[in-house]
Length: 276
Length: 299
Image 1 (cartoon, rainbow over the protein chains, first blue to last red):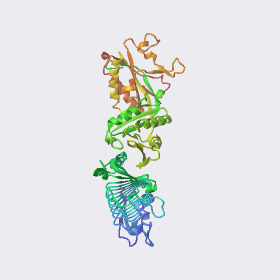
Image 2 (image 1 turned 90 degrees about the vertical axis):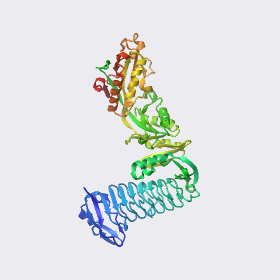
Image 3 (image 1 turned 45 degrees about the vertical axis):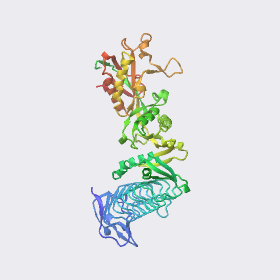
Image 4 (image 1 turned 30 degrees about the vertical axis):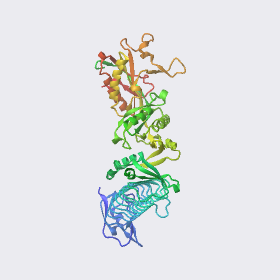
């Protein structure tokens, strides 16, 4: 069986919601029926067949080819299977995803993995703001699963996240881990201001010391955190492209905070432990 | 049947169903992992008196532990899941958590689980932190040496306890030399432990006693000092010591294999070096469902 492949014929003029194309929904459908699925495009409807040429037959493994920068909600609510995208994607990729795997070979827009519950999202490129965050109207951000970004992310990574893990091989913008309830964020590059601002619990691990640390975080000193060994062992064994984490930790500078909101969260800065 | 001139009795070892857990203990180095593992598996020779039977299965290198540190695999057996849970919790809490740099993880992955960090976390007095990695929850308990890492729960599996064989020797010294060879061979078999000191029982028991308050007493028919006193002693004139090797394992096949390699190794000294006979302990086949017939497993 060959993966069900959708190749973009022509970029649409308006944004398109692509939440209909998930393995759970396409299972057992013929290509002709899939081509007739209606999609919202701006203020009107189009069919899948209008936008994509379709080949292959394995609906558990979807491939999307083309510049999909105007396509939002790819893999939304997905529960199983895999979606591979070769090209840019729009907003809310993998939002509220429950399981399965999404791999994007390109950049992703805002709200990547927002309100995600489970599964794995890999973006081999940069992402916009609010990675793993809470969509408007939602109380919490992601509460399960793993998001792995090889490039940089915008502002508010993991905003109000409750559980799960976000790994950035690149840098994070301002307010990384702000208002976190729990979970783990790892940024291998630089990070902006207000890291962990308002976080209640959870862990933000930074490879490099940010320029400023919010005043409501207190220094616990340079410590050997055995948890980092466990985490990095887990990550390097699970994700081969994170092999550079092997040998990092357990030494780090630990800050507890945000003391304005209970102080049960923590920042761990890896480079600071070695700089003195 | 004879192996290297040593007579193998046509009898069988009778073993019992147990519940078992495998714990992985890691530490800064093997020395400190051993300190924790030895403490945890100390006073765990027999479920009758200790509540559980436990032993070190093997050393683990950094590639085979969850946190990439040197580790020790410990097997712990008890008669029920409830009793096993009690013993594991007490022993991990008092022996592993108290060992500097030690951490504790489950070495098995089955749905039947008993609490580990789930209960021990309360030692953190509200400062404990939970982490979920790939569906497995870990607890980070702040302690004076740093942080005690512990998996939330440990898997429990059905297991086999009480596999055994008896070595009839000229003296205890001769018997020990055979036992040491047997234990060395058994150590290479995964999934089994020999819970008694050095792997050898020097005072095997029988069920019951002349005293009403005692449920087990010395196996007088096998005591060399009572040869001339008790009726039906099973010892011939040349036997001056009987040593027993008890094996607990995660499954019947492992226990049988451990008995096979252990007996073969014990026969190596032969009669000229004081090893005369190999037997096994049973209760007539009425108590335990697992029967390891010596002639069958040594074929």
